[in-house]
Length: 477
Image 1 (cartoon, rainbow, N blue to C red):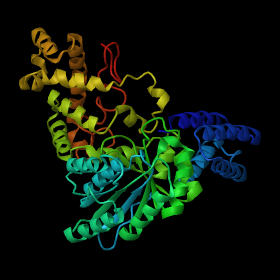
Image 2 (tube, helix red, strand yellow; image 1 turned 135 degrees about the horizontal axis):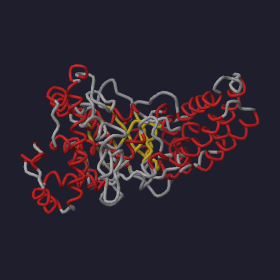
Image 3 (tube, rainbow, N blue to C red; image 1 turned 30 degrees about the vertical axis):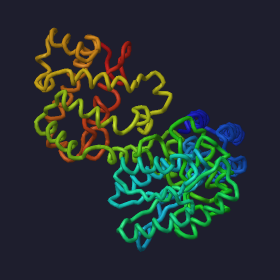
Image 4 (spheres, helix red, strand yellow; image 1 turned 180 degrees about the vertical axis):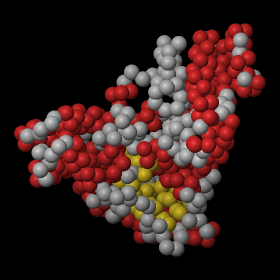
């Protein structure tokens, strides 16, 4: 997300960093480029103007231009103002003093309300709470069925009255059910329209009056730019929003909505949808988001994603095996890849590492199919072969290639790179007492299985490459 904006800002701010001295004229010229980048990202014109006025005022008013590192000072000012623009402080969902906490989702048709309802329920569930999903959309065909399917996949109860068109009554009944059954949260999936009309707003006001929600969250398509801000204004005037959820932010979203909503309405963005999976709903933290826009990485977000997806017990067993005994076999390698896959696309993970910029990944081949090929190769081995790869002679490798449907040279490449990783793990085992309890390489508590990214992080091993490529951070054969 924000890739084009991020690249433009990095180019402009990089020019500032390269200068030992920055004159007011240089500053004004650079800020004109920043303004152009913001407007191309579809940021509200007034928001962009005010943002640049504040940056220029601070840069000229604090002897920044005559400091030892004026470029770094300007980058810090831009970062701090981006944080203010996005809404300072990490917004949290409201919590009722007496359960249940009621969250009402509103938005236009096609914005992703039903999927977001499921994601929100999943997030609440992970926190040890008991949510109830409520179908309050009697108009869209199969809306109720979709919510029921999501509820079944999450093992979350769903309140649905297929023949009832009085959605205010449905909402009131669901809140009462949650109270009786001891459920802690109620998530209302309301109806949408192709356009925000008065009939929709009247219905939403009626639902709000009956359910008395603690949160009214607008679910808006992040791809729509300033149009999302206009939509948010309409819903805010009608029902009083307490927050916004931006969806479809994993694609080429220009960022205008995220950078404009708080500045125009003063309503915080609380979550961002970054994929189709139920885990793909992340808290919108302005400070971390500003860091990602300025290509400073997001190590906190990386750790959080690891904590949400990685099997802690498996990680502890792995650490004990590697650090205690210095052992690492193909079974361990396969489990490492599977856990890494759960965290999402590798390109996205790499961009969250401080110092790794998108342009550094231009020539990197990270084909998700490649991990499937690796898995097929390893699963075509016998358990004994996975534990003792030394027994893999030429005939066995040919058999594995046939069984996995991959060429022999891919089997050879995988084993060569695994041997290098195995040597590194043995070296780590020798340092076991020093590393025990401090986490394996990768920067996560307890480490990522496999020592962070496969191969012990960037560079030095890495994922085996596909046909004709050496892979990321890995040696070619």
